[in-house]
Every structure is written in C-alpha cells, then in structure tokens.
Length: 191
Length: 285
Image (cartoon, rainbow over all chains, first blue to last red; front, side, top):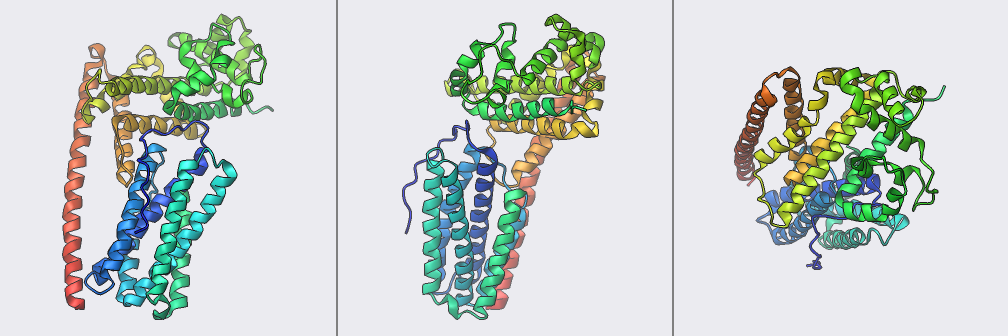
C-alpha cells in the first residue's frame, strides 16, 4: 500500500495568521471528497465484494478510510465546519458506487478512474494555491495533500490497469461522473 | 454621508474573527503584540485587549507610532466606557455620550454612532463572548494540567450558558430593548455571526469533535437552549434567577436525550438499509 506514516496531528493547531477562508474551504471540500470516496467504494463493495476485484476494491477503500480519518483530525484542529451536504454525499456516493458496480467490474473501475482523476486534479490545484499562499506556514497540510494526491493517482492507475476503458460507454460515463465531481466540489467548498 | 455603521461593524467582525484566531494561541498572540498593547493608554480596560482590532487596523508588526490610536480603538474605548451608564440610560446615545464624557471627550462623540445603540449592544455582546472564551480557555487549561476534573457534557454546557447569561445581569432591565435592536434587519448579520461564533466556541471547549451532520444539529440545539433560556431570564424574578437555571438544566437534559434518541433512530435506519441491500444483492444474484 501507499501509506506513509503520518505524524499524528495535534488537536490544537496554531490558527494565528492562517488564511481562514482559504483553509476552511480546502479542508471542508477535501473532507467531503474523502467522505464521498469512502461511500463510493462502500457501494462498489456492496455489489462486487465477493467477486475477483473485491480484495482490490477493499484495499483502495481502506486507504480512503485512512484519508478520511486524517481529514477528520484536521477539521477539528483547524475548527472547520463540515459541509451541510454530507448526508447527501452519503447517499449519492453509495448510489454512484453501487450503480457503477452493477455495470460490471469494468464499470466500477471506470468510476474509480473518473473520480480519482477529478480528485487528483483538485488536490493539485489546492497544492498550487497553498504554495502561492505560504509554503512554510502550511507545510503539514501541503505534505498531507501531496501524499493523498499520490495515493489517488495510484488508485487511478490501478483502475486503468484493470481495464476501466473496457467499460460500457466509457467516455460518456467518465464525463458524466467528472461533471458530477466538479459540481460536488463547487458546492462543498461553499455550503 | 459617511457610513456610520461600517467601521464598528467591521471592527466587530474583525474582533470576532481575531478572537477566534487568538483563542487558539493566546500566549503567542499576546506576547507578539505585547509591545503594542503596553504602549497604549493605561485607562484601557484589560478585558478589551484580546478583542482589540489593533493588529488588523493599525498596520502590521507595530509600525504605528506609540501615540497613534485608530478610530476603531477610540470607538471601542468609548463604548466600553458607555456600558457603565446603560442601566440608567438604556442602550442609547445618552449612554454613549456619558461614556465619552468620562473619557474626557465631547458628548458630540456620540454622533459617531448609530442612534439606536446598535454598536453599543454589539460591542457588549462581543465583549461578553470574549470573556466567555477566556473563561472556557482557563478551565480547559486547568483540566489539562490535571488541576480540575473534566466535566460531563451536560454540566459543561449548563455552566457555560449560565456563565454567559450571568454577564447580562447588570443590564437585565434594559436587555429586552437590546434584544429587539439586535433583531433589526441591519444588525442581523452581525448578531447572528456573534451568536454562532459563541455557540461554536462553547461546543469546541465542550470537546465536540463531530465532523458529520451532528456538527450542525448540536449547534442548532444549543442555540435553541441558549435563546429560550435568555428569554426566560428576561421574565424571571426569582432570587438569583434560580428558575432560569432550573429551566436551563431541564433544556440541557432534553438536548442530551434528543442525542440518544437520534442515535437510536439512526441505528434502526442503518439496520433497515442493510436489510434492503441484502435483499437487493440476493435478488440480483
């Protein structure tokens, strides 16, 4: 697995001089993203858990669980409020995961590829934002996001390796899912 | 026409933001701005210091000269001095004028403020919230040092709300007037902001670490408890407001029960969903 030992985040982080609006958004949307990803994998496992890709999906899901745990900690440390839409992402994520899995193993992989690509692009732009702000001040956060971006990239590659492109209506599916991700990101940053 | 509302509201919002920032690292904040604080007039009251907007309005890193005082600082001083006269004059321009007089300023200084006393009330609320945060911070330190027991959640919430409401006691006769002013449309953004920040602070110090929808339900419930208790307090004539504190105790107990009920509903819901999923998988196989 791609786990690096992450330093346990202290529950009190110096909030002095932190650009609250920017950090608020970043942590809120990342938390929502990891939460959604968790639910997507849960949906996929519910359908494909006993198939040959079951262990693989489980492995990726376990990494997402670690990511979510980390963002839960960061959320408390930076005193960021979660997005109101969490219950919605709960249901929508599961439905997306289960729905794509019902299209078959390749469908599930296609969904993974689409989502992970969206997420890693999104993490990249956050890294750029933080680097522009103050790389020193946000060192820990940058480290976390970079690590997670690498993990998501790995999931994306795994999806491709397992013949995601062979899924029914792959390009349509991928575009639709990525549009959904963009909308989810937009909304979670704000509400 | 100069916008009279903007500077105090900005100051209040800035002070509310700064208070949150300074909450977490009060020592660092205080030590880095100590030079700035020391150089200011000594008649400034201590509890105002953490709330002061100086770092944002008077330049970065103490570039202003020692004698320079910004308009916001002056307004804060006047409003703080005016509080003394509120029991007699209410939340009015008269109180502000009297406050200005005690600082050796002309009563015309009251003209800087809105005639309905909005800034005075918002200033007072902001000050009370700061005091509450400091109190909770102190308590937390004692618990961390092992010098005090960690309170159970319901007691913590009761004590925090009571401490905050007790700050109203000297002004209780005029508080209904203040509440109605706080509900004026042009004050709602500020008063709502102050209220939500205060409630968030209480939950934070109570040890709330929820990162799901509970974050919202807890704050909504506590806001309800606080507001209703405040209203009861307005009408309470029992000695030392005993009836109010009993009401508060009951409401907090209700809130705790609500939490338990919600959990039960959720587990039932989850069981139902699992059942349905199992059925779906069975059917699809």
